[in-house]
Image (cartoon, rainbow, N blue to C red):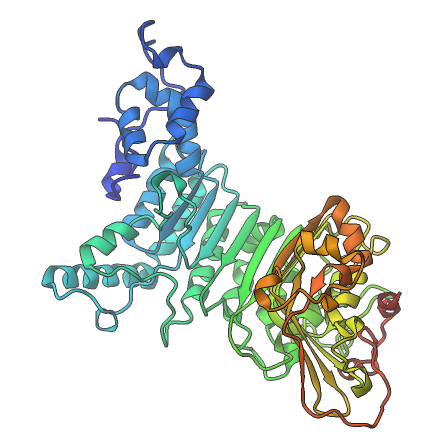
Length: 544
């Protein structure tokens, strides 16, 4: 019996049955067969609209039709596939990796953070059989992790996948499966486990005491790749809930460096979500030591994404990491104070990343100076920049706290600094869910920008050059677009005059302004409090 591909059934046995491949000799269909006379692209288009169950049935009608649909079928369902740390799920991954027809298609392996908690910590149906099934599943997952069998299975699979390009860790199920209506792409085994245990939701829900699970999975993935001598181009961490990868997950033991170094050196893409509150040292300059050492082993990155855990952190923790990333030991470059004379064993030298083309930063509060220095360090190679959920915290003189002055918005000056002369290769700028806060140096007055959004195109045209922040019709958050991507011919005009597109509904001042004046601190003044005494040869360009 030919395989229905394990798409309707999640039984691991379904992956061990035979699937025909295009290379097999097949008998030509009758000349009267209507489907056989159709062009391949027409046949593929027709089957694109049928549900998975019907597609599998169509493939079972005859070997010729199975062969005709094999490429589109394998590309859609096996090019990118999600699994979980659960025996039946990982066994299917191993089976796919050994399949001569399917293994070349699997290029993107996803490990889901589907966590099977202790039976007493979940709410299941009052059914003895289902409770027993959950207990067995819990024991299975814990045994896989504790015994090292999960790593062994991943190593076996990674060794057998000739075209593996990306491995990612995520804590959600993608809703992009349009073929079956509102069905999503779940981890293999998830639906069956839900049905047999009565537990419907056990993905991406961190519980007290279990926040370290993503770190454990990240360690599992990287060590399996090293042991398998795999050479993927990308490792991604895509986490939506309130947990992230902690610093100890980035440890590269000295005795494993011969296996790790080729894997990390071959990476072109690295996406991370960091738990900034789990620091390795109280001194912010020496925090995240293992992460910094890990990044030092990835010199060939072309795309780096750094997001932070969605939690309330002490101000300055994210900043310290970005200052290290923005630093350079090359002559004439800016360096964070103390970095040049630091002990490398405690504070590794900054990474240069000479091939970096895209840099994404998200979910943090940062000063404009640090943000400026970070992107200008890589200005000669950057082609794309993305900023999401970033809040600029800026100090200023009390006299400049004026909500009607657009120039007080630190985002406007920062965006102007991304001009073509400084970023010759920049082609794309993605901005989403931005905010800002300008605090007086001499009083408690604070100018808040809870939303730094963008006017709608039709509204921007009506303004005739009037600043968007003063546009009278922008009332309330609903009338401001929270995200926008600038590419091509639209990018340069925006960077020349960002105020024309930016809208700041809801801006307001808190605190009581004082009448006294003090020295003004420019948005990009290089002598901010935390950088006193440091050299900053490139800082002056920001004010141009």
